[in-house]
Image 1 (cartoon, rainbow, N blue to C red):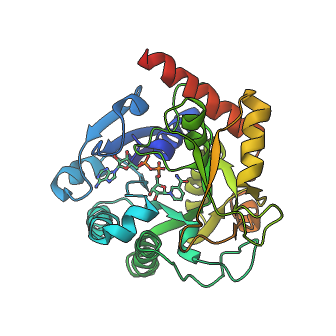
Image 2: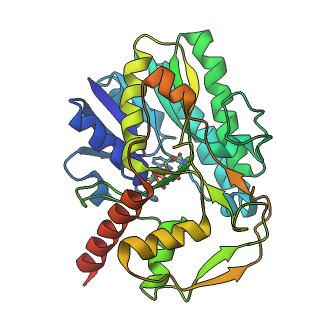
Length: 323
Ligand SMILES: NC(=O)c1ccc[n+]([C@@H]2O[C@H](COP(=O)([O-])OP(=O)(O)OC[C@H]3O[C@@H](n4cnc5c(N)ncnc54)[C@H](O)[C@@H]3O)[C@@H](O)[C@H]2O)c1
């Protein structure tokens, strides 16, 4: 089966392409390389193009059986400052892609949604039926695209999965692909930048939250576990009903716990300093992954230490490559 991995030269998409290949699928990567990297698509057919380009997408969609849609802008802070950029790419251009899919024979669509659709959750761990009340424009764009799929699905017979990721982290065990964001805002690679002196110190945003050590708690999910869930979602779509599914481990870790894990795994202390809490940052975001277990027969397998170890291995490799 051929699968179009849109945004497959990015962090999560490249891991999904690799997982698909390992399970016998034939992924084709489509990416404008705006935030992606050709090096992450090595070993795959890479078509450089934008999701707004329906003319370019049409012939490619003619030779695939399913689409995984990872392409989006994904910085919460930037979405507050420049929402236009987010609504254009994540909603308008995303719907252009969706319409191009409808104009083809493809009827399986997997969407990279986010726990940001829930906003500040009414309860933790978070189940899929919680109200979706995003608290920033990025989350709103993800919610709108989910809603487009909810309307298109029954109207046009499009099978879809809204996969709501929690915090993707880590890298493929091979050390060949990993996270490459510029600027980097995710906790673990940002902590590595602090260790390497590429930033003065890691900023810890707030330590007065109602959590055991006062710092924010998040559900860190290994990117390979996440990637494998996509393969299972594709298999589920062959016979199942379109769904929204949380992808997380069900366990939260505070910022301080992550810094301890980094020390434990790498032997290096993360230089850090306290910074004011960020507006709209919920104290705790942890998935209830029960639905993913039931529907996809999927459970996150990799531990926090494996997340840190694989991320560190990838970071070391990138550092050597730059020398
Ligand atoms: N990283 C996380 O923890 C996380 C959590 C929740 C949801 N998500 C979602 O998962 C998806 C992937 O995230 P990521 O961390 O891999 O991001 P990423 O920036 O590494 O990857 C996104 C890829 O999409 C491409 N792209 C963006 N706009 C495009 C366009 N108009 N046309 C063609 N290609 C385009 C980029 O070049 C990039 O390669 C995003 O949709 C993001 O919102 C990520």
